[in-house]
Image (cartoon, rainbow, N blue to C red):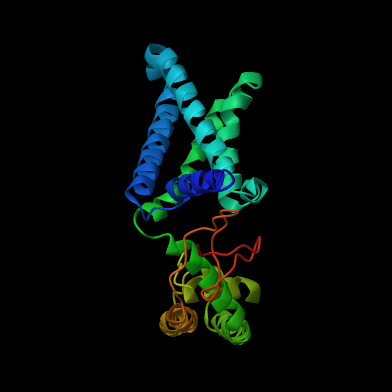
Amino acid sequence: MVESEPKDWRFKLHEIIYESNTPAGKAFDVGLLIAIFASIIVVMLDSVVGIHQHYGKIFNIAEWIFAALFTLEYILRLVSIRKPIKYVFSPLGIIDLIALLPSYLSIFFIGAQSLLVFRALRLLRVFRIFKLGQFLTEINFLTQALRNSLRKISIFLLTVLTITVILGSIMYLVENRENGFSNIPESIYWAIVTITTVGYGDISPITPMGKFVASVVMLIGYAIIAVPTGIITHDIAVAASKKKELPESCPNCSREGHDSDALFCKYCGSSLFR
């Protein structure tokens, strides 16, 4: 009975800090985001000379209050999991540490407090609050979709490269040199800029034939954009259809982004379900 109490306490703390499915968890995340927003606003306002002259001391006190709160929050995150080192080296753990260090570096290095704007990275946690914690999992879907479609996309990119070389060479032949198409590499550069619909406008065709070729390149550009989008979207839809509801993070190491059919954490091996 004595041994189970610490586990129960740690599990409840983990639910509040890492999950947003409970009122307490959502309230914690909302409060954290408000504090992050407020600390970023303080840093930005403190960088304005006129405001700093009048409220610099107040901003300094506020900054150290935020630093203390975020330090406490970071410690609680480590305490609430059985393998804290896993969290320290996880993507969100690294972001939290980077956001925390500038406060203490400013003691030794003048101007380091300006790095506090890195706290904006922590706003990624907003996805938890709006039930978009799945967003991080969708990144895994996208990565898997890219792996599955690598061969098709490689062939597609090779085809696009061939088309741009051909169209650039054609434009070199039909356009005047004084219009910017002075050589084939310059013409290929124009074809790439045009076919990707970027359109810098630093080089543009003048002759009727050049305008005709440019029109063809523009139309091809719109068609090209749709191809990789369709490939990746299809594979993501297939992966999503196989997905089942998982906890937002591992209760043991706090890592996220597990496979859709996972029963155990792929980072530490513990069960994802209690």
